[in-house]
Image (cartoon, rainbow, N blue to C red; front, top):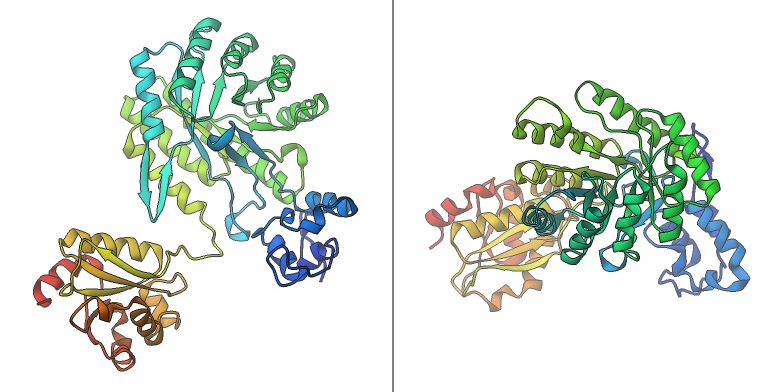
Amino acid sequence: MSGKETKGGIKQLSPIDVYMLLPKTNCKECGEDNCMAFATKVVNREVSVDQCPSLLTKANQKNYAKLKEMLKPAVKEVTVGVGDSAINVGGKLVMYRHEFTYTNPTAIAIDVTDEMSDEELLSRVKKTQEFTYLYIGNDLKLQMIAVRSTSNDADKFKATVKTVAENTNLPMILCSIDPAIIESGLMAIPKARPLIYAATKDNWKEMAELALMYKCPLVVSAPNDISLLKSMVKTMNEYGLEDLVLDPGTFTSSGLGDTINNFTMIRRAACTMGDELLGYPTIGTPITAWTESTGSPTVKAWNEAYVASMLVTRFADLMIMHGTEGWALLPLTVLRQNIYTDPRKPVAVEAGLRTIGTPDEHSPVLMTSNFALTYYTVAQDIESSGNAAYLIVVDSEGTAIDSGVAGRKLTAETVADAIKESKLEEKVNHRKLIIPGKAARISGEIEELSNWQVLVGPRDSSGIAKFLQDTWK
């Protein structure tokens, strides 16, 4: 089977398309058993073609170039910043996550201005850099600082950019439509590769020259005018610029519908119609909610948060925001994390034995699955109960308790094997295992296979504290 054509004319790759351009030596240097297995993983984006040493030789240079062209994403990947703190935006392969998966989660930048006091400026930088929340094993963070020129004073802007750079390693967005001001900011951080915001129909040439001179990515802005945006991108390409980010404009209130439509049309053109002029990352500016003439700061922060949430789901690869309140940013970062998980793979943790607190030979032994949400909920509820305990995390292929039991991913055999592998018999002086209530149907089988007494616990982990208080002696 070879590549097929979709309705939009975009070729869908199959492993044979990649295989035909590989050396076909089955040398195993890539870590796979043969070239076809490697080709399959390349198509699924599980490995890179660069992991084939033979393909990187001069003899295979043409095939390597063909593969890179075939495998390039519909939305170009653009890097902002340098070193370990650099972030990638864009790089999307598909329009909808269920088609494959999304890469490079939407980067969120918090703004500062060159008219803020040093105290306010440093406080906002610190809040941005230190924002973190552990969610299902992942640290949710903010990624960037956007430095805005509100004074229109080049010296003030340069000083502000320098101060920010001295107090954070986060990548920056330099915001002004005045090329002279942008240049003053670039002079403060000449090798930091910030994102320049923004080139318009009036200043594009000067901004393009700065982007080329300092080797920086550049935002191309044409609010509510996709035709103009596309024309500007073509001009920028001819001028020698490839690392571009598209700004179709972010409008709140009555303009919100146009905003969502513009972002959607741009991504559809890139992913389903193969329009390379629109195949670049997009930037949203929910911060515009703060320009509304009515409403309290709380209302404006709320408006900004819901616009940002819509843009995360509607293809924005990068956003500039103003609010720093946890109640607005936390739900947004959780939403982003959920959207950018791989729909092909359950969110799972490593199976094995965990200790909660400092358990001893008398401590209870509980069991759960390795579905991440289940595990973290159960572990937290055990910890909250105040009991030290052992927790056996059984490999259920990332499924929850009830679905794992129903689908035979969580069986008496896997539980018994987990007990044996954990060597719990050397750690406790009892043979009692507490299983979730939703796994009650396999309790008898577990007892037969493991020779442990099974206690059926609560169906919901919120009942663990009361169960241990009433039952565990």
